[in-house]
Image (cartoon, rainbow, N blue to C red; front, top):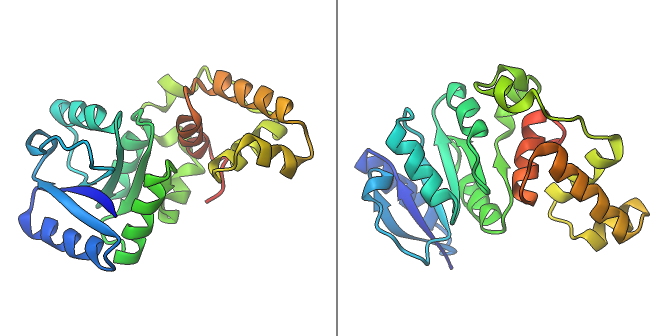
Length: 208
């Protein structure tokens, strides 16, 4: 059973999300709140499903505080919200349209629980032009380009493969894989796999 929290300002929307998520019995909505400030701490919550609201300073603080400990699935009404969210440094997160189907929502929650990044294909056009994202100039200007081999390794990281599996897939040694991953982290300024994948998605190096 996956325990999630639902965050939305409108009570009817929270109720609708609960019904969609709990269909099938694999997911349980353990907490509901109108905002992060109202969300009661619960160490057993694994994923937060949050309807994106216009960002405020308190909202950013709330997302950072919760997102450092557990995955957050943001539901957005417009493409304009995607850029700021992609620029925000969360280890594990997902972004889907608010109108996503119940099946898509549940699949996203399962993926986030496993530490994967989730991004809807409808946002693919934005990924092909990352320079259009707010904050791109500040964060991306210093970023070194990856080599073709490093991009291959990054794409396999995004699939959740272990170092040994990547080595077998590419026909190289596990030591070489570790070297490539270290280089990827250094070039992207990433602290872990999830963050490297997030930055790789922003650059368009990881196909969706």
